[in-house]
Length: 73
View 1 (cartoon, rainbow, N blue to C red):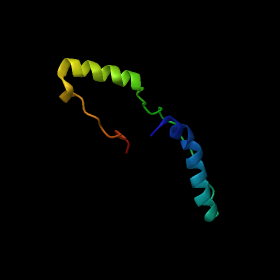
View 2: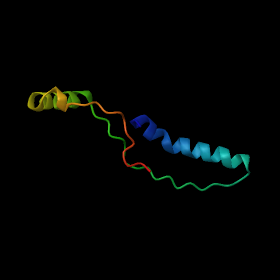
View 3: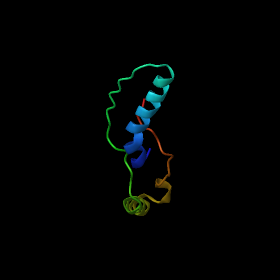
């Protein structure tokens, strides 16, 4: 869910799969395809948009949301 986790994901997947396979004396082949990095909005840009929307539409137009995995399936 952040850039560091995205960078570490391939190593973590390989380590976890290899550990499980090792317990069963199985061989593994992993084709890990790294997708696009996560979107991380910088605070300054968010602040500018917040101020602009508040000025234009009022404070009711601004709503914080929880982090979402979006279309991850």
